[in-house]
Image (cartoon, rainbow, N blue to C red; front, top):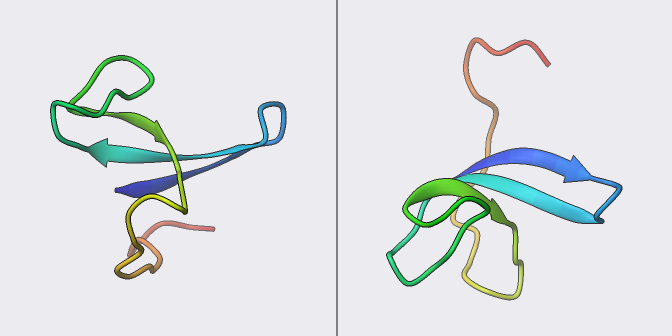
Length: 54
């Protein structure tokens, strides 16, 4: 999953990536945008994408 950012209008954090067929994203399932749910799953690691200017 890649963290896409925070939407203050909806008070949600969004991630992009793949999930199983049983999980629905914003536009369907598979590779999609998903709301970050900190109470579901676990964070393995985080870091910046090399070459991206922040």
